[in-house]
Amino acid sequence: MTNYDHFAKFYDAIMGDRSDVIELLQKSLKKHHPAAKTLLELGCGTGSILDGLKTQYQIAGIEKSPEMLKIAQRKLPNSRLEIGDIARYELGTTFDVIICVFDTINHLTNFAKWETMFDATAKHLAPGGIFIFDMISIERLHKLMAMPTYTQDIGSLIADMEIERVSDNEVEWTTTIQEPHPDGTIQVYEDHASEASFQLNEVIKAVSRRFELINTFDSFHRPATDASDRVYFVARAQ
Figure 1 (cartoon, helix red, strand yellow):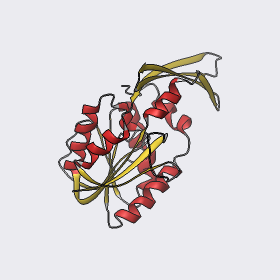
Figure 2 (cartoon, helix red, strand yellow):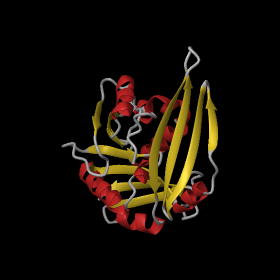
Figure 3 (cartoon, one colour):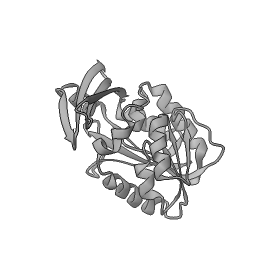
Figure 4 (spheres, helix red, strand yellow):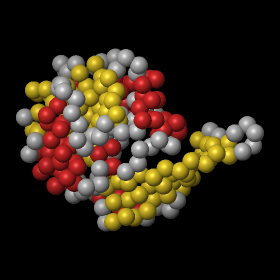
């Protein structure tokens, strides 16, 4: 796993607009828990998702990277934002909604950590609370393994993304960012991140042991399958 400390200051520029995910969350929560008041994001990064939800909920977040969390704290100075490990967390309170999006769960590279995260989340959900998360599928990982290194030009920045196969269900991303300075020098940053995925039926079984599974769907709101690139889960506290 990575702590994203080198990547943090470039993260928002590279990841771009996240309004589509915010809208998806808003619609799902309006449908399944319109009375919700409190919301926790696992792996809140630079706080962009929480920033889009702050007018509707009392928000909180957990993030492993200190540098990512510093950016989130500047966006959300009055919110509870804490350094922590989403695989095993204890906040001493419950929430109406817990979310974990942008394949954050895939950064947990063994399934035992997915299960401890589900256990912690079940413990932190208020009665009737909703848990929404997404994952990229093994099929998507296989597609990533076949991709050549690619380059993004983001303003004055140049970002190279290289994806290497670690195993049949895990890849490692290497992101190299070149940042030009006014004096003509170029600062180079490099960060690494691992992602793993697991069979959809295995994830569904693990979720269903701890929550009432309401729905699984893909990015196009079709029923999820192992061929889906990204799968969304909506579950309710038992």
